[in-house]
Image (cartoon, rainbow, N blue to C red; front, top):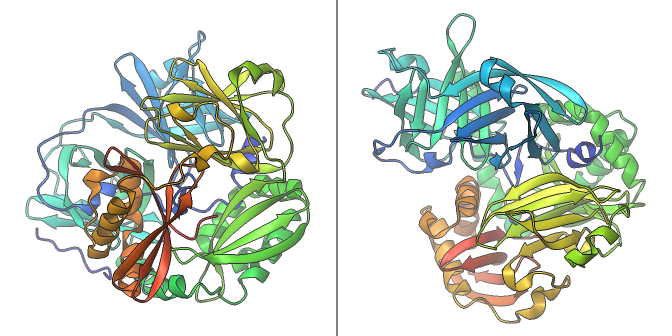
Length: 558
């Protein structure tokens, strides 16, 4: 809906590879294309908020205009979460240095300094970053400050607005094209949604509310600046335009004119270190400008382009292109604006012709020191039923870059071909070694599959027992705008909420579902289906375990 006046009623190597053409979105670990961060996913549900308050002890540190590093204290343990990434337990060394395994490089800081300072010096990829504490929980008790000072619009993403309204003696929030939710007061300038997702209103030097920090358990915290009604209305109108255009584009699967040429020009500009910001939207230009050195190094490593080809149109309206370079392959997803500029570009490195593989733990010492130079993005999905840990092995065989992957959650990183990663249980005991390559870009970790050779997903030639039924129910719920979130993992539920406006519009255009046919099984052990509708067809991929959807993707996916 268009923005109306709110009613008064009521954040050098892995970094430069990972950062190539990174948009202001979350890449959902390969299984669901790409999504925008959901700063307040529970906004999707309205109704009364139960009297359940936000309990964690947490400090929020701003690392830039939108990136936030949150540090949680739970008993004697420390946890950290960077914007767009997972909440992970922090390792604290004997010298008191705490470390957080961010996907773009390990973040370290003094745990003791974090306790007593309003600012924090973070170290990442050899650089010192001064982070400023902008908020903390718990906070002082709320006073009787007028609620009207919070009412207004806040830009939580380039294409999304958070609207805050007053509803009597309470506040109500609504994100672009999503449902409304009531806020529960947690302290001075602090509110929560259902006692989980936080909204902390931040003040400027004049004590006026100028930003809001929005904390989401899955995607972390973001800083959203306050904007005026005109800009809010323009953002929402542009989003509505996209939702209206996407169904026809998705059904027809025809590229927009000029997309291939734009990508080719962009690659050459970036290889030379001279991107043409005039051909980009403001958010994309700002992101490329901040990460130019890393982005240039990535394309220099890939080498000259040999070919580029159209692959399809994604459910978000992005044109999908594959590219063959001298030293690897990659995928680009391009969103063109009506004025001919690149609104967003999503890049995924796919490695070269090296196959990679899964090695037994006994070979851990033998796979080191063979890392290539071709960038590749790998994704691991945890179906072990308990936490697993992932370590990168350096040239000397030392374990580096620890990450913890929760059950029924995905983890992804951009590395290089043949650069080995140890997958271990929660105690650090090796389960298997993943050697990145064409066959191991996607890897499902489950007890029955430990140590299996790549491609073994074909072991299951028939669909999951209730996979088709769950897919039909999912399609029905999305079509009605009422997905059954109770039968999804938190990861799938959050992504479904974000994509709902587009997917619902696509299903409305496709019409009545007539048939569903099973086509195979992916490397992530998801079933591939082709759904036939009255006005077209679409590919869906779904993973189901114990009556819960663990993975979902509306194609095309490659």
